[in-house]
Length: 153
Image (cartoon, rainbow, N blue to C red; front, top):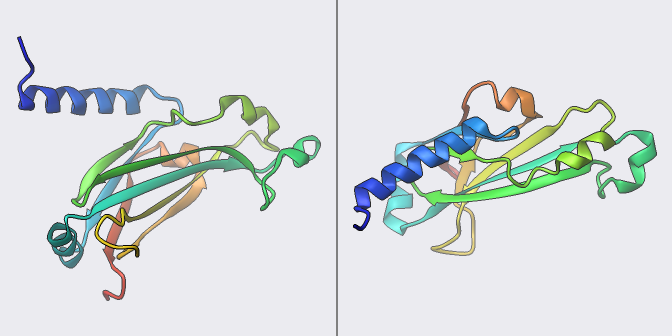
C-alpha cells in the first residue's frame, strides 16, 4: 500500500519536529515575511535559505585550531525552504560536539542568517533579521526572524 501525499507530508512534519525536540543542538525559527516580500517571493517562485553557523571562543591551548577570525568552527547547517512564512527546524546534525572541549567557556554560540535562495537571479532580495548569541538562548523558544524586501521601509 502506497503513501498518500497528505500522509507523507504529515510524517515529514512530525519527524522534523521530533528531530528538533530530541537534538542537543537543534532549535526552531519562526520565519515571517512582510506582505511585499511574500508577494515577490511567490511571483518569482523564490526560496529562502536559513544558514546556522555554530562557533565559540578557543581556550588558549587551542588557539591554533581557530579560524581566520579567531573562533572555533563547530559546524554549519543550511536549510532551504519555499518562499513562505514558516517554522524552520535547525537540526544541529552538523554540530561538532567533540570540539566543545576546545572552547574557553564551553559555551557554544550560533549565528543565523536568512536570505533568498537565488533561484530567480544572482542577488539576494531579502533584508532579514539575524541572530548571533548563545545556542542555549536560541533553544529556549522559537527565534523570531522577520524578512522584508531589500529597500522596503
